[in-house]
Length: 115
Length: 110
Image 1 (cartoon, each protein chain N blue to C red):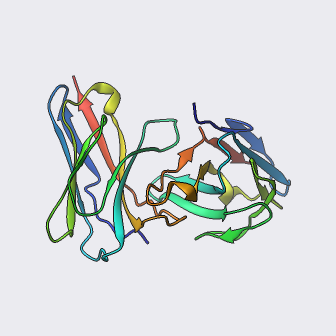
Image 2 (image 1 turned 180 degrees about the vertical axis):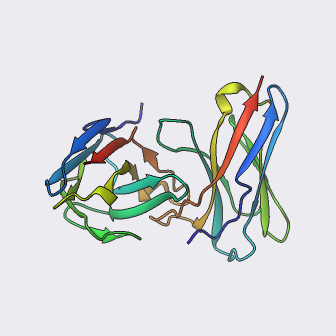
C-alpha cells in the first residue's frame, strides 16, 4: 500500500521555537508537497520539491523553509514559530511518471499549536 | 486562486445518488478536472479525473459538459462513509501543483 507518514499527529510548541515537521513517503515519488489547512481557507501550498535538494515556493512560503536531502523525506521548518502558524499541516507526494494522472497521496496531517 | 466554484455544502440521503456540481468557466484546453475528497481528520484522497469525456471508476462517475465549463461528480449510492469535503480542481495534466479551493461539504444522512 502507498504510504505517506508524518512524524507527529499533534504538536504543541511555544512562540519563537524552531519547529521541524517531517514527512516520509515509501513510493519512490519525485514530487513532495507541504500544505497548511485552516478553517474557511482550504488547503494552501507552502512549498514543494520535484527532486532531491530542489524546492519551489508555493502560495504562502513566508515564515517557512524546507529541506529535501533524501528522495523519501521532505521536512518543513518553522525557523521561529508564531501563533499565526497554528494550523493543520499536510504532506503529499506524487510521481510525474504517472503522466496526466497527477494523483497526490497525502499523509494524515500534523496539527500544530503554537502558544 | 482556485479556478473552480462549488457550493459550500450539500446533503444527501443514504443510498441515494449524490451529485456534486463544479463550475470552471475559465478552464483552458489542456486543463483537466480532478476531484479529491477529505474525510474528517484525514488527508485528501484522489477520486477521479477527466478531460472531455465522462469517466467512471469504482468510486464515482464524472460528467463534464460539452463546453467543459462545468462538471458533476456522482456518487451513485452514497453511504455514511462518503460524508466528507469534496474538492474540484482544474490543472494541467502532469502539473505538479494542484490548487485546492474550499470544496463542498457533503453530509450523507441516515
